[in-house]
Image (cartoon, rainbow, N blue to C red; front, side):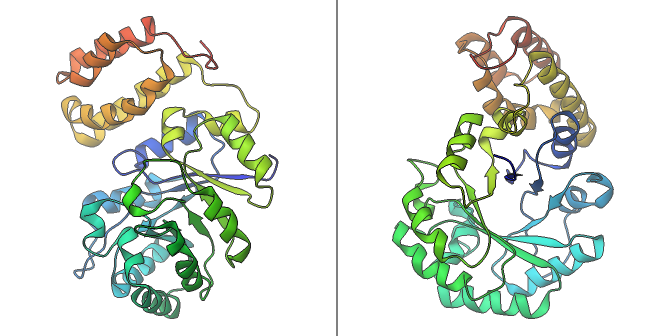
Length: 319
């Protein structure tokens, strides 16, 4: 798999700057991190949270591509120019978020409903920005066959990259990705392609690269949160270790406590991350239930300590 580039997908509330910085420090291997989406509005002011996530000083040493979610080209252009002034050379347009609250506003995958509007959006964007623009997309809203017409729109513009998650919006994350559609459309795409969807193990990476030798970019999300060393393993490095994960967790928890100004406020993002990390352990209903129900920081620390001491690694993970 020499020459394959690995990207960390944007995951709202999880892959924020504290997580990215520590992931880079502990595990490395990821070639690009994509930020959770920025959502500019007509007031053209970043929220404190959004600005903090993309500040260069918070992302030093992290190869970051900021992602933008909007249906208005004017807001996209403003945001892209602000990011360019911070030193970023590429931004990513979110045409893939399947959330109903997002698509109902014509954003994310909702942009795929009106292809003439998407065409006008991209025409204005490429007429006004001086940064590279990539797109992360779904296949459509209801039927995978929608993607042929969608791809024709993308092909009219000099996208730096096209990241395809081969499901439609209505499927959310259910069912198997439509790789046959990805395979059929890959030769027709003018932009370099990146595949995203249900790559959750080093074996998955190897198998995809074996069957898709022409695709040299993979974006990983849920699988990489659930095994932070996944890319390292895919590149031939060691599997994740228990003590390594414990050290990563402890530094991340401390960083979240500082960011949220209290241990109690840090519990919510940490438990969101544990939703994925628990797959590293053999099922233990009592410990899992205790962790998910934690509302007190002292209780959380005790439960996590028990999990690392008593929890059994699944096979394939270093003890």
